[in-house]
Image (tube, rainbow, N blue to C red):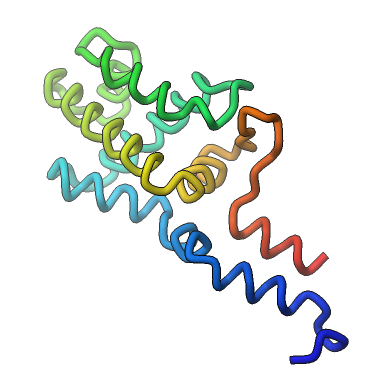
Length: 157
């Protein structure tokens, strides 16, 4: 295709040929919940509720410090989970699961999964957080990071 007909063709091609772009497209809330369901055995809306509550909580903890703190926040959170933790109580209330030990276990599994994905696929998890939580994630240098959808949209402006 000629660059005079479509001047940003090569940019789009490079973006789509980037392996990270393919990962970003694949990692979405449904996939993360599916991974969580496989690990935990928990089915239905409770699994989605747990993942989204944790994501919102983590974004509050990250604040303006940026996405670079994600692994640290998840590690701290994972080390401090028990039945009295406010996050565990919130998840228990929203899911209706009565056994606080089960809720603590599910929360731990979800935190561990998100942490694992943040290490294996930082761009994908960042995009997922941005889409699910609706927040712009900023790295430690203050630069706004864009997900694949934003990058592709930008090519057509």
